[in-house]
Image (cartoon, rainbow, N blue to C red; front, side, top):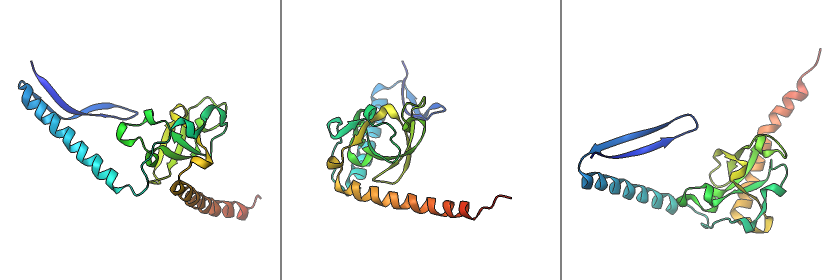
Length: 172
C-alpha cells in the first residue's frame, strides 16, 4: 500500500499538492512528515521571536460584537482566534483596520472586508463573519493605538493629492 507526504496549497482559485513523496515504506514517509513538521516549528519560533509587542490573544469579551457595529470602515476590528491557524492567534495577527469592501457596510449583501493589519501594515481580505468585533478602546493595546494613528496619517496623505487634483479640474 503506497503512502503519500505532500504540501497542500490552496488559494481562492485552485488547490494543489506540492513536493510530493510517495513510497511503500511507512516509516520513511512518516520520517519525512516529521522532518517537515519540525521545520515548520522552527520557522514559527523564528517568526514569534521577531515580534516586538506583547503576544496576547484578543477575545470576544474585549470587543463590541460585529452585528452591533454597523458600518465598520475606519474601525479597528479583531479577527476571531478560531479563524486563524493556532500559531497566529495573537494580537499582532488579529488586529486590523477595515478600509472597505461590501462586507464593511451595514446591511450589505457582500461579506468581503478589505483591511490593513495594524502590526505589519499588510493589506488583507477577511470575511465579515471572521471578525469578532470592534475592539473596545480601553482594551486596545498601546502599540496598536500608535500604529492605528500612523496608518490614519498615511491614508490621509494618500488621499490629499487626489483631493487637490479634483479641485484643479474644470468643467467646460
